[in-house]
Amino acid sequence: MKKTGLIGLGTISQYYINGLHESSLLNLVATCDLNEKAYSRALFSNIPFYKNYKEMIEKEKLDYIIISTPPSSHFEIAKYALENNINVLIEKPATTSLEDLNYLIELSKKNNLIFHIMYHWQNGTEVIKFNELFDKNKIQEIKTTVLDPYSIDEKNIDEKKYHLLGTWIDSGVNILSMIKKWLPFKSLEILRYKVIKCKKTTLPIYINVDLKIDSIPINIYIDWTKHQNVKESFLIYDNEIIKIDHSNQTIITKEKDYPFNNMVRLEAHYYNFFKNYNETNNLEESILIHKFLFEVNKVL
Image (cartoon, rainbow, N blue to C red; front, side, top):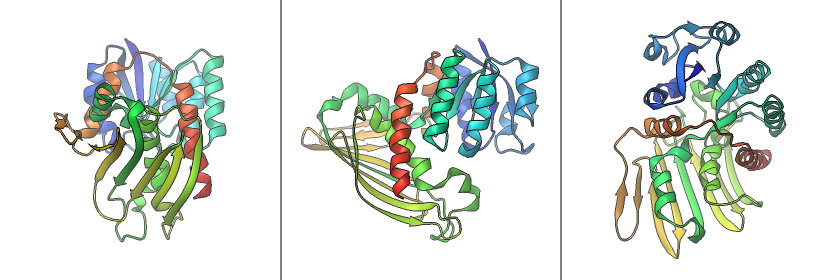
């Protein structure tokens, strides 16, 4: 088992527990957060807690770290770990620029270390099952909608969500990571877009963008103003419509429904990831996902 430390005990890390418990590779031995009263700290109270990740790395002699902090802090933490011979599992987006991502990838290669980005949507049970049951080559069009209740007044992002860097950086990377399982990402066209920005931060609070990826029409609609939590995709597949209800982990076709909702959605994502993680890198895939992510972000 690999001695593993977790950096960042915000809301998302609560969903790691069952997956880490099932991992045959990762042994969580310590956690770290700047905030002693961090959201998920109590869930990991049986292992040592640190406020300084460098101290945790030094004292615990770690093999791996999991980075679950705000994206703006990813580069500094990952760079330090890779420079100190520690493998890295990191939440999406890995960095806030393609240049920083390329730097970390080259550093991981130089030191012969793992640098693996965790795209939790790829590990949704309904996405995994779609990939098993259906032929990706028959996908003709994709529309994905993400609604999150991250605004109080419908004009501004909740200040507790500023660290997510707006609708596109936070949810766009999820959607692109799913689509990457279906398309090679050889080409990107940005056809049209509408964006509404938070009045206080100028971060996108609403985006509706039409793309072509490898000549396949893609519509991505992300909205934080409606006080709803909805995730769904509609695919034109072999001239019929397939709905993937991500919120309820269900695939819906004209003939039948395929429900896979025997676990809380985000818990299932990380359960699938950690249980099946086998010391791989996903560097080539990650470069393409982040390249498209930042290309769209430039025009917003």
